[in-house]
Image (cartoon, rainbow, N blue to C red; front, side, top):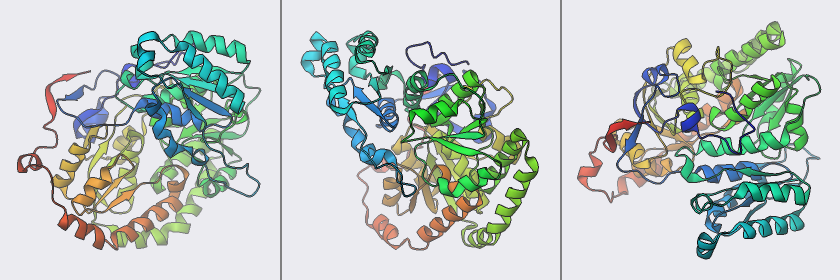
Length: 493
């Protein structure tokens, strides 16, 4: 469906896309139901703590250059942002880069009295004080569960402050209770930023946009795009207003994953005609080949694209074969965000590893872009590579993940954040924290990933001994549960 930037806030993924957080079955079945509303969400009688859309709306906004976020919430809602503060997730890429800086997040500090008498004046005062202290180029006001429950008219306050301060002041609807899918927080960020930072493009440039968390590793991929005459614009942590303006003039966009990048890429395609490349993502060798062929065709340089692919494949083929000889036959369980879970499933297969089960933390049956000829990346893998395996969807329900590891007993777990690794260690199973973005792109990325994995599996002594000494606090009945026994019998959207 089309994105309407005239609206105050973005719709949640459940509303727009029919996204789900509860499923068990096969990848082929999951991807065959490719329309919003065709895939039924399985609800749970019991579930453990998950992540929050509010948290991700804040950290994405605060990571941009020249921004300040005022969180209209109890102070604890912004407390976790300290993990994203250092250098805004950004490392210097070359001598002469601007100095690193911390993210700027200020809380209005809603307290008990405010929930009774209201806190709009407190919000206005907080924004004014934050502006005087930090002099940002733009301010984003994030709403919260508390501000929503007590019915705060934040939008009217934002309009007043925008006129008073003379800089962009925008609302980002970050109420965690709006959505069970934390990627809806990425959409809130994207909706607000798209309204503030995009303008009318002047002309098309030889640039391509990359949407992600950080530009780490771009030194490895810039030369590949330069062969096609393209410059990469990184709309990541540290991105400036100028970067966003230039992005509207690019020939194409792609993102580290659909969870984080889908909304902005779709806005760029819908409003500015910037092609959204989603069907093939450039991770591992197979992904890189398909992505680069698509890009070569789009730019009219298919012959150069084929030449680059052949050179990269030849350059790393010997190392890849050596890694495959050490990894073939290993069994992996994958637990990652929706945009990367199935990408890594394919990449692991390139190294000869058998993925016994993949857990995605949510699943979008469709995306926002209007190009109806484009499949989701995972759908393309099922169609083109005949990829199929047992899968489930849970929003970091670690009790389910724990039971699935007991069921499959893999050689290792591939995950990222959300504490799944802690449960693997308790069972004596090694766990690897996956990389995302540029660093796993192409054959070079495949070699780096495989090398790290060989090193991990080459020394499992500590993990095995830890698992042997661990004593579970759970009952025997719990330890023998079906991983999906928490599902309710009825299904709901």
